[in-house]
Amino acid sequence: MSAAHSLSIADVVIGDELPSIEIPITLQRLVMEAGANRDFSLMHHDVGVAQTTGAPDAFANTYFLMGMFERLMRDWAGPKARIRKIGPLRMLIFNAVGDTVRFRGVVESLDNNTCTVSLAMWVDSERGQTVTANAVIELAG
Amino acid sequence: MSETSWGLWGSWDETASLLGKQVGQVTGPDPVEQGSIRRWLEPKEFAADIHTDVNAALAAGYNDIVAPASMVFTYGIAAYWRPGDKPASIDDVPTQIQIPVIFDVPAPCDKSFATSIEVEFFEPLYPGDVVTCTSKLVDIKPKQLKVGEGAFLRQEDTFTKQTGEVVAISYLDIFRFVATKVASD
Image (tube, rainbow over all chains, first blue to last red):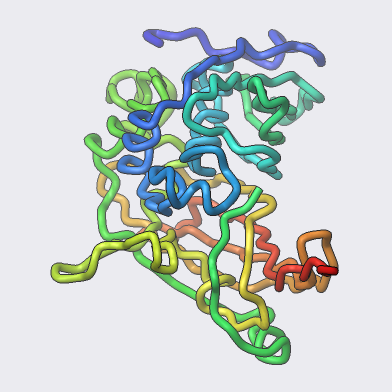
């Protein structure tokens, strides 16, 4: 994103969908992610340990999901937006190696006085809806 | 969804004695800097100039390159190993990020999983900032679920920078329990 446009509250209406992001979960991506976000819990990069928790393979950690929701909002709203809140974020199904996941979101409500927008976001994959999260973002004006 | 672990064993009275109290505090070992931001963006294919280009960040109203808001968790995590520490193996209790309501709060439970997290963001993080995470046990709700009997423990984490400014406050809900025994014939 270079010299990106920032959304203003006047650009947004309830029901607007955020451009979705599709991303494949590979072990390499999870290993890079663990190294970068410092969540080295074994189930996120070790298939043997992951399977003892009932997961089919190593699976994405919470910080990856948080970060991807932040990317979903940033890609949509632009550089001048301020992310105020993410959550409650609920993990429903594992996002495991081999899955291709899609991050999606929709505008639920907006406040013209504070220039804030409430979003409902979720992740889906071949397994169904895997994560849900709400968020509040303050737009440029 | 499970992130199983053993946790610290103790009585419910011991759990209750910590309600409302600080149960952990960690200062992240590394200050915010451009390299760690770039490596965090990379696996997410996250391209936003405010995190990498000072001019773009200034144009967006920041004082410098700004760390992604949700990176506050990363900068508040303790170091994992010291020289000479034994590497983790499959038979060990998993080495996890600090979750004091599992590992430092006693409870008569041998299993746990996270159910929900929410975080509110305040001051931005800039290069050079150092993050301290202070954890409190703020709620205990006994509950019988299909997986077992136990309680939801709510951990409040307050992330501050070296100036004392609050960067973020998060709430993590953990269900700690003893697994329900399956009756056998």
